[in-house]
Image: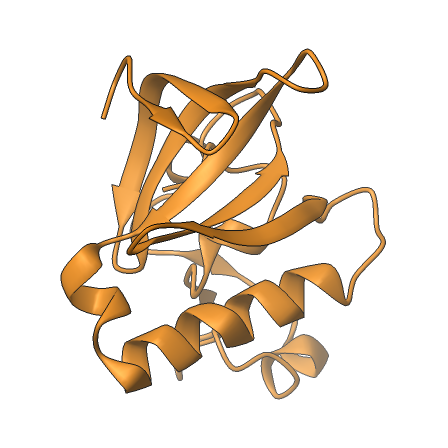
Length: 136
């Protein structure tokens, strides 16, 4: 998709990919800014369950206004391509900051987070919501 245009966004480079799509750096040609586009794979968009999960993720992101949560600008589609337009946040990838084995949490926090395993280690459940990630 590099070099292609999706709506009024020119795709500049791939930032990362994961289970729910690929994230690209894009130029917003209407507003003159750089954004992140999370593109749902076409085969996933055609699956009602996957499409619903993608839309739930979008609603979860949009429901937050916090310095550590990326700003979601829009859920869009161009033809059969479905994508999220989000604030571009630069920095380290979460995978660079947290070891694969996770990070221990104090005992009181263990019962409150679904991403915490029985061993007390935090594991990344959804990186799309956290600003400290580079979208993978």
